[in-house]
Length: 241
Image 1 (tube, rainbow, N blue to C red):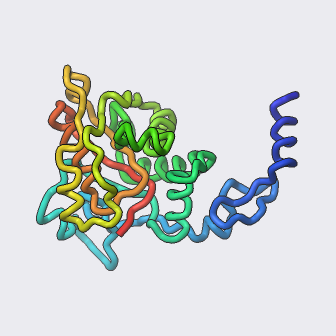
Image 2 (tube, rainbow, N blue to C red):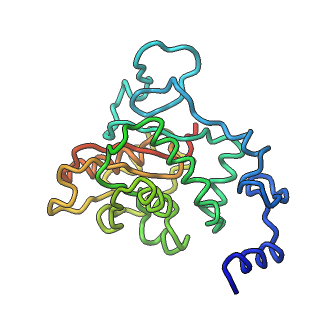
């Protein structure tokens, strides 16, 4: 059976539905229906020049938020594509926890547009994912950040870092219910980048699904910089509060 016919056969058995609202999609519709696309809240300028937190109101100069003023992160810049509003949360959590791997292309679309919007072309030598601890990786069955990072690397034409080159050495508790200060302490020393010059002089783009306080990506960036990376920038699908 030809691929086109097989696809039509599958669509007849399993009609496409919008991952945002569950409504049936017409043949000509994109993977996310137009109503849900209207609910996507893209993070626009102005933002904090370090962590990318959205700034509400007019800002005519480079702005640094209070958190970054008090403690500069170890990454150079971080940017997120969309706000973690109800739709953003639904897409990310389904992909992350519910095996909804078909959402990968939609989420990588967000990441790619974010990179092209906020970062210069040909700015990176390696794309890297925030790692999971092996125990959590086995429980979940996959690392959602690694899937996103690998697909983004292909689109950007940049090498993808092997999982062994940045690992999580501590099975830390979830960051979800911790305060900002507790999050920093929770992930302190939790990541380790491979030695032997693998990262020496590289400009790294670090990928994750959601950034809230930035404690996790900052801890990863610290490990990469200690291993010799020239710079680390961060891109995430969504930015939480």
